[in-house]
Amino acid sequence: MSDKTYNVLFICTGNSARSILAEVIMNHLGRGQFQAYSAGSHPRGEVHPLTLETLRHYRHDIDSLRSKSWAEFAQPDAPKMDFIFTVCDNAAGEACPTWPGQPMTAHWGFTDPSQTEGETEDKLKAFSRTYMEIANRLRIFLSLPLEKIDRLSLQNQLRQLGSNR
Image 1: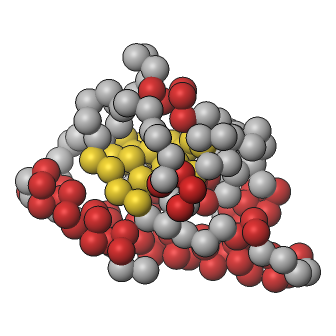
Image 2 (image 1 turned 135 degrees about the vertical axis):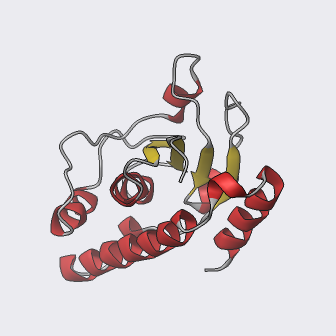
């Protein structure tokens, strides 16, 4: 295992649900090896209340979470990203900022749980399902021997992981 800590940014349009879930899950599962962040192209300005409820249910700390713009991470003093993942189809189609350091990128689309209609119970189930899908994808990603495979091979594996939904 490498001593390197990899920085990863999860991007979604509103930065209120999927990207926040991915940030928290990666920081939990990848502790010591990854530092995760999240951002939005058009941040909602607040984390969706059911995102917070879902994270509380899975016993994550939510105190420091906030909805933020991807522009924060394109600044010269921002952490240099090793990986950037879009987690919604809208963000994947947008023109992204130029990221310092040429990070590896991939699109991992997940259904937006905040668009679920119905009773609160139905909505919570959608958030929980998205949480589990993201956690499963990240477990697979974390099983890759990052320090032992070359950049091109890793980029191809990331793309395949994104298309195996």
